[in-house]
Length: 391
Image (cartoon, rainbow, N blue to C red; front, top):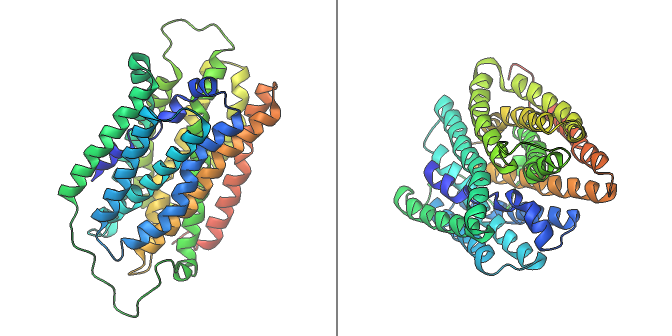
């Protein structure tokens, strides 16, 4: 299933990787670009509570096949049909529904058969597989774009998603889960989850985590492209898509290490330090574009590392805080809230960049910097709700 998640995710960041080209080809404003990135997450938010909650009732394989099929349809549509903003919006929304059917349903299928440290490690390695694919999607998109144009990158993503369907057919059971005892619960009844204060705290932490991560992923290539344009770089310097890929791959080890560290030294402690460091990095990163390309790249690396440090720990916290028989609903709300933040992150940066106009350095500084308030607010709520440090 981790292999399937890699394949279904390998084209996920084609558009952010190729965004500078699409800004020019489709004559997009920065706000429109933010919408194209963000609508993926908005569609995810709308679909995920239904699709993940259904995994408490029907075989996860059915949900996963719907998700991987939508992902393939979106990528192939970009390869052969998309010609402007509105077609791109529709196809990005279909991709959001696809990821809603793959990400948490695939993770739940893995964790349902595990418990304790093994379950936490499964969450960590699942996140690592998804992270590797997400990082490599920047490189794959850049290479295929250089060889055959942007449509080739989306064609590859569509074929990979179809391969994920074949793996799911083989790996996932066809039988539905065993229903928990007691009266039947409404499909979208999240009230028991909302009453679970520890789980709610981790969900809020994950929300601001994905808010910040989605903003950085969406705009990092464009940010480094803008930083590179300010100085004459030698030909041997790799392009922004290669640098972003290398950063993403390096941060996979940070994510796995962060989860192991959280198990040894306390999840709340690790998450607190990680979110505080990410807030500081967001305040500083945007301004580095006016100083040096290499300093800007180092700032993106440091910010990514701080965000990735608590990635697995936050999701593992939600999984372990879920009440018996409520894991699907809890993970559904976790994902829905998280990706609502992910919708707002890229759009917020785009709005600030458009507001700044020709003052590009001010736009990057404030566009990235405003995320510090979001992160610190989420950290305060997480600590209030998730219990004392000993928990």
